[in-house]
Length: 96
Ligand SMILES: [Zn+2]
Image (cartoon, rainbow, N blue to C red):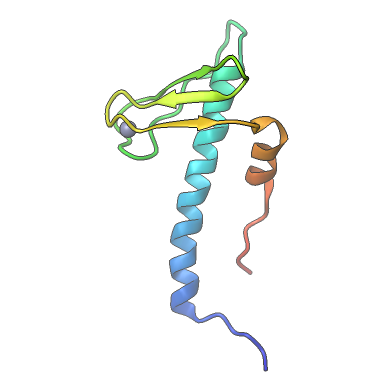
């Protein structure tokens, strides 16, 4: 018996995939912003939750990227982003 994906399920997964991709992109941008010490620092990404303002992302002492949104107070910490984050971002979509 073959497992078949229902269309409704595929749509639901598409939304969550897009959300996951938005969060992944946010993390990539936050890491790029925090880890770039050149004069042409990339702009910090917009908060993926409230989308009202850009977050503040800084590199912590242990090389983790700590970010906080001054608007909605959501905050996060991205550790071990060297390698793993890019794997996450480059992972091909599961649909199809
Ligand atoms: Zn926010």
